Length: 416
Image (cartoon, rainbow, N blue to C red):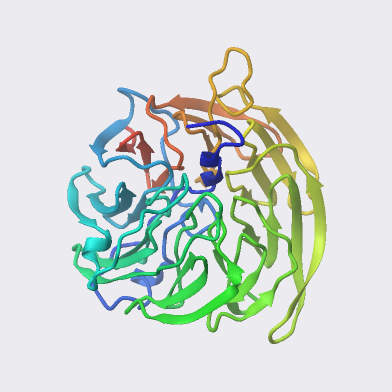
């Protein structure tokens, strides 16, 4: 890993995923199991796991229930779907792991040789590599996107439903990073620009070339009764037909937005909150609620909880904002490896996005350090943990367990 300004630093926003209940096999694109929303990037996209009750302490020899070697991967997070965990690894592999004991149930390659039609292979460019996007699952099927532009769908038994290649160059400087989003029977992928695929067949439903590919993953939301995707660019797209409803919110360089109660929060050095106060059929007007200036580079996506926004810069500055007016309530420079290069502390990066599980806030770096904080209006550290093999993604939470990547392995953390 490298420090601030490196090409690797663009991948911080990739983070943890969550846990829809498992259901019997059905047709791809149907509603998720038991009505649960799909789980992929940061769970439902918010980074919040309110029903989780994870352990607060772990480390070598402490509260590690099992460890499974998966293979190299820099940034992608695991996804929990009932009794299964989905995750990707280099060069183009999708894994299904038994959540109970870490057994690898199946693995599938997704290279050019796996396509039904012969395609001349082309390696993805940039530091992002081929396996940065986090998969998404509705508890019945799992969908994966790779840096090559290959997109694939599998059922829970590992039977491929469809696979296709989009011969589109990344619009981002350092390569492909945004994760797929599953909403309303459509798989939203950003491959040069935003494309909606039919989840059941993989066929394109619509394309919007005005919505360019970003590093940050789109966030699905329902605003004014309309299913939309809020893009890292600040654009708002109607899911049903790809219509661009809003274009003037500004945008994020690396992270993903927060959407809460009809308000869009764009948190980075120049942060803002904007609310849709009136809606026309095809053109929404946003009112800027506040603006706030923060210092540093922001690769980790922030998290909202009970009127507070928690944010971390790559230089290790942790801040708490009031979501009503953007006021900075507290700031603290963390004494864990970051890009700040302080004397006596190793270099690191705050790539993993923040996560709130149950009543605790989790802050991670790529060196294997995790701080457990009490979510409130001031900095309250409860625990700090370390796994020697670090990783650039955040954990996935499911009940009393945490699934956390470290080096080339997947760790299951739980009370012993």
